[in-house]
Length: 272
Image (cartoon, rainbow, N blue to C red; front, side, top):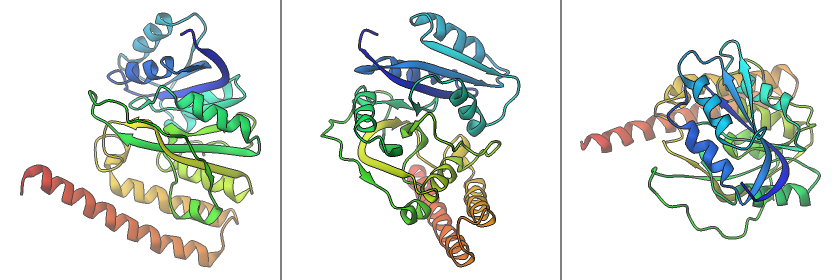
C-alpha cells in the first residue's frame, strides 16, 4: 500500500460474506492509487463474519480500514448509507463483498470524477470471471452521459461500479433490499443531476447477475422490487401516470425474458 492516496472512501456492506470478503478487500488494497479509507459495514452478522472483519482491519495499515458495526441486519441499502455517513472522502465508491475491482479502477474512475465536477454519479461496466481467470485488457475509458429516460428503462450499471459525491443529497432508500441501486439512480437523474458511464469492465462478478444464489436468486422478488420502484416514483410525482403504466408493462416483459434466460441456462447446465 505505497500508491498515491486519493480522497475516495470505499464502502463495502458485509453480511455473511466471510468466504469472499478477503478477495474484495485485497482488490481495493491492490489499486494503483489508494483510496483514503475502506469502510466495512457489518450488517448485523451473527456468524463469524464480524471476527473476519476485525482480522482484516488489523492486517492493513492502522486506520485505513474502518468498521461500522450494526446491531441488526438492515439490508445492503441501509448498510451502504451507514458507511456513507461515516465517510470522510470527497467521493465514495461502493463495492460488494462478493465482487472485486480491476487494479486500475480507482485511478481511472477518480480521474474522471475529478475532471467532471458536475457529474453526481458515475459507473462502469463489469465482467464475469472465474476465480482463476486473468483480468481483461483495458483501453482508455470513455464516459458518456446517460439521459433520464434511459435510466428509467434499465439499471445502467451495477452497484460495485458506483462512485458518488459525498455531499449528494440523495441516499439509498432505507430498508429497501432489492433494486435499491436502480431507484437511487432514477431519483438522481429526475433531479436533473448528471450521471455518466463507461463500458470499460472495471468491476468483476463471480456469478451470474441474476438467477443464482444471493439476493438475485429470487427473480420474483427482483420483479417486485422493480415494480415498487416505479410505484414509488409515481407516488412522489417523479413520473406521470402514463409513464408509470408504460414501465409496468415494460418491466413485465423484462421479467419474462429473465425467466426464459434462467430456464435455458439450467437446461444447458443439465445437458438436456
